[in-house]
Amino acid sequence: MEQAAPIISIQDVTKRFGAVVAVDDVTLDIRPNEFFALLGPSGCGKTTLLRMLAGFESPGEGTISIGGKDMTDVAPNRRPVNMVFQSYAVFPHMTVFENVAYGLRVVRTPSSEIDSRVREALEMTQLIDFADRKPDQLSGGQRQRVALARALVKRPQVLLLDEPLSALDAKLREAMQLELVRLQNSVGITFIIVTHDQNEALSMADRIAVMEGGKIRQIARPSELYEFPNCRFVADFIGKMNLFEGRIAGRENGKIGVEVAGLGQLWLPADDNGPVPPEAANVGIAVRPEKVRLRREPEADRIALRGKVNQIAYYGDTSHVFVALESGQVLSANLQNDARSAFQSIAVGEDVWCSWDPGDVLVLTT
Image (tube, helix red, strand yellow):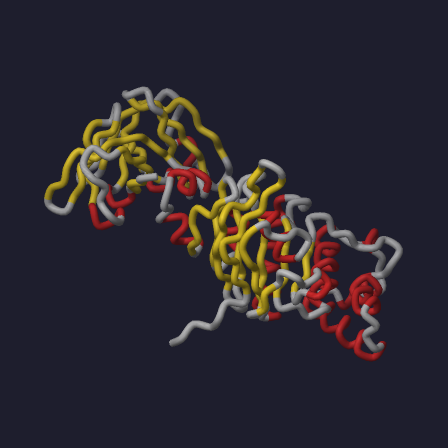
């Protein structure tokens, strides 16, 4: 089946602010009706890239096309996009209905059409019962939905979201993540969200672009990004990771031997780790904390290392256990608290064996 043409095409885009390269030779396509996330730490260039899509910044090099049209000379108010900012920027003296209608009135939309389109936007965002209220009579999540309704009422091809949930408390933020996914599915347009929150991106996006230093390090679906990061930065930035430095020591029977300082030689399945690096190459060896099991005796057919529990962080549903290995390195494991007394099963100061399946190990070459 032939894939639809991208709704957004970014080709070789670079943006400089003086000597600072904010966006560095970025190329990517975003598909119609996709929920796409730009993810990375502060200063990585993700917001600058979003602002170039909106037309608030111009690329120094490269081109941006939306709906097959080059946006180089197209003003922000002429682009088929709308943007929801981190601060909701709703007008405090207007009702919810008036806030949502404002953009349509500015472009002189007929009154009869304004009424039907505003009500449609309020229905989509589940605000129809709040149409006559002022913003100070709403919760933070409701004010965020007003900002979304105001953007959607103009029927853009693409909705741009700049850290839209960062001002909300943790529980409301989680609820709004589900709300945004529901809304995107119902309106059937492309959403592009900028966030520094890995869980936010993983839970909402169809695909994620991870950025560092103005460059895109990896673009993938959430599960692929989490389980198969392509470099140390992505592995360490997405979720938690135990990361050790090693060196390729040999190959044998479909496995690669990796010498890891303080841990000895590990034999890992070559097929699980992409192209096998050359012998003597320096690599990163990584395993997620939830793949690690803690036992009082070593387990057969698993990589097993002995250590002493030196800290336990209790989070309710899980406990994050830090184990000082005999090599002096610290390894972390996530234990699911699936019984009311589960967090007491491992104690600080206890000797344990940390083990994991060789197939759960990532070999990272960059």
